[in-house]
Image 1: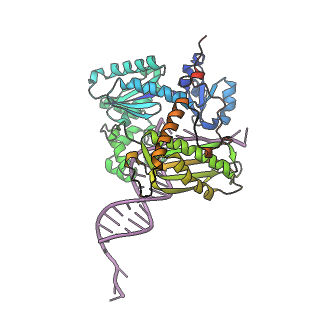
Image 2: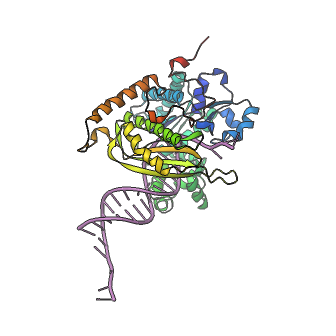
Image 3: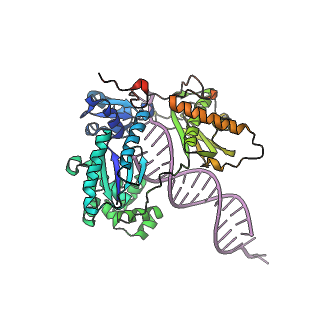
Length: 423
DNA sequence: TCTGGGGTCCTAGGACCC
DNA sequence: TCTGGGGTCCTAGGACCC
């Protein structure tokens, strides 16, 4: 059996952790640039505040109801997430961290009649050790456990936050209660199609044949989904040490950018970030792609950005920040159009290989050994001091384009000077 | 005025090869 | 006049996830 453990309103819960006065009160957390609402407590949901809705559209509701608002504080959430995952690892030898706030656990070996008690104990321990409330779904497959989890979350009182789908009767009841759009793996396009076939619940879909799914539901993707709904595992637990196949850093600017110099600074900064992630997993990138997004074609106040992109295959895979920056700058120049109003940029590192598999070419100088040391020092200093104490000059010093985060809380757990003060 | 960021997987279609 | 079949690899783009 597989469990999915999902933190309830994770970002908002992290904020509450250090502001106990917010318990029982509505709280929302905003995306980068304070753009959208990305986390809401149950109290905020009850006020009708929509997930992923733009902040400014909900502002009135928020102010009238005294909703606490926070900008995203990724230092805090990342650190709390680690504590939660560490706790989960003491309950199962195989934990797959699926996202910042959820993990799959392999519960093979737990006796069927013990699953419920074990899950309840797991839930209580996690909440006791970390202060973050969680919901748990347990079932033979990942898709079914996601369905169980959703039901646990929806009815926290009735289920006590734990739902187990062991036998077919329990599964049938759960699937009948689940609309097709709420199935993990069925998105907007898929659900529209299913509704057209008069397939409205997960139970309806479960009873379709694999052949039908192959023809009408995206080939093998659909077949897998049907099997998983029928309790036959097709989506296996992922190995914890798998490395990323692409690494991206993309961001909206805090305010529009018109100058080439500023664009170059932003791109160089994003590359520094991406290269850090690359080195953290001991990889090198073989290609770099880059996009600039402008908002020149605004019609009737509509949000209609257009983006231009370009890429380069690197002469030899690398993890060196300055080499990546040097390769990217000509691309920025080529894409830049004077007079355009740029609102976003991004870099994506691809063709990723393990760094010890780099094949140096004939003309590689001894410089690379030096550079390797330099990267090591930069990463260590930046990791311990943070705030990019060491950086490349091309990343600029003014950063007019930096994102807005006007309501960010303290980084309570990762900075000495921002610790929580108890009177 | 104001609409996030970072990933994965799959498919179709083109280029190329023998 | 006649103009194959089968395979691989790569890229772009779509769909989906949190």
